[in-house]
Length: 345
Image (cartoon, helix red, strand yellow):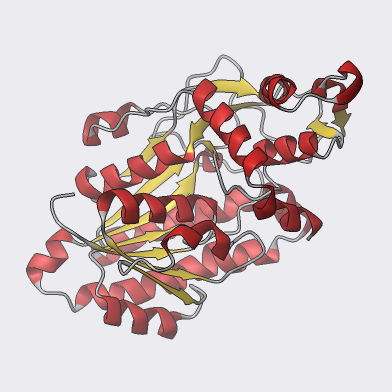
């Protein structure tokens, strides 16, 4: 960025948000205010390395609390606002969807109203440079057949789960606040993320940690569901590029265009684990693979066409999956203290 920015981050203590904050503090040197509700999937430990940095501040708060958000927006005077705050676990949305409706729909509506109040009072030069970015998911597009073209930004929304439906609703709200009220918004729809500090419920950390504990490695159905995988650092770099160069009122698909089945992912992790932390008696980690009943409404394939974000912003993914997954396995091996208590919870 050309000059230091004030960036308000909502949900910055979660997996992707905390990586985004560390990237900005350590590489971009922007001023960050992180407001996070600190739900079960958030962790203050994810940001321990920057707690004492003068460019970082934290407040515990909920995006549903409009007055609280309004007050702190006015105080901080952000140039950019990035919303990561969301309930995001598909399985949990199937068994307890009310939290997803509250956070991902009601919370985003409340946040938009607070942001609109702030934006309407800005002077013209500040209005011209201000941006609100909603971090969303490729799951809003629904499922693809194996040989179908990858998702582009012109694909219609066709969500399958309560989670993806709630994210689709929030995207529609954000776009409506742009079209009706002139709010300068951007939306990013990203593929599956992986990397350090990801909560144990997600596939890659779950498999790594179950390997380390020599527990069964659960695989839904036949393991042939396909996902596009991107390292979280590449995702965060893309968000910065979209903030800087994205066209207001546009959405951008972010992905690495690297597709793997769930079973391929698990076998790759097992091979890395075999070389780094071998099991006793010549046992292999893939012997722990256990096929379990598929979850309801399980989308078969997600795939991202990232041409638009590359064309508009110049962004390119820089971390290969082979390097990224090995680095991620190493991180979980070396940071057992970070995740072991979360597994117990």
